[in-house]
Image (cartoon, rainbow, N blue to C red):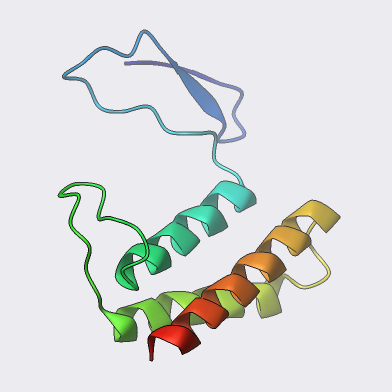
Length: 103
C-alpha cells in the first residue's frame, strides 16, 4: 500500500487492491468522533457490525462510548472549529436520544 503523507497525519491510499489492507480517510477530529459515533450506533443495534454484518446490542458499552464523546466535548470546548463543535454536539444529541429510546 502506498501512502502519501504531508507529515500532518493525513494521507490517501493509492493503488488499493483486493487482499490489501483497506484505505482509511485522513486523520482528523471529525473522522475520529464519527468513528466513535459509528461504534456507539453498532453497540446500540442501530447499524450492523462491519465484519459480520450482524446486529448486536450492548448498551453498557454504547453508554461508555457516548460518555467518551461527552468527555471530548468538555475537554475540547473552545478549541474546536465551528464545524467540529457543531458535528460533535449533533452526534451527542442524536446518540443520547437513541440510547434513551433503547433503555
